[in-house]
Length: 125
Image (cartoon, rainbow, N blue to C red; front, side, top):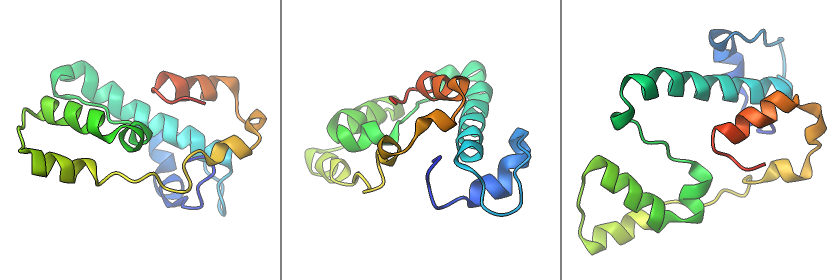
C-alpha cells in the first residue's frame, strides 16, 4: 500500500484514523500509516468482540497458496463444495505484478514502529 499509485483511500479516509494527510499526493509514510491504522482498527473492533466470527485472509498468502487458504476459508465459513467448485475457487486468486514492489524501495523512510506493526499484522517485510 505504501508505494501504490492508488491513494484515494488515504486522502479520503486518513482523517478517520487520525492522520493529517497533506493536500496533494500523500507520502509513502502516510499511506503505510493509514493502512496500519485502518487494518488495526478493524481487528481491534472485531476480534475481541467476536473472535469466532473473524477470519483474516492475507491476500499474498491467498495468491501463494490458494488451495490451502481457500480450504481454510471454506472451513471457517462451514461451507462444503464439490471438487469442481473447489477447483474453480482455487483458480481465482492471481498475484498482481505490483506484489513485492516494496523490495525495490528504500524502507529506511519508515519508522521502525510502523514496520514492526506491519509484521504484527502478519506480513513479511
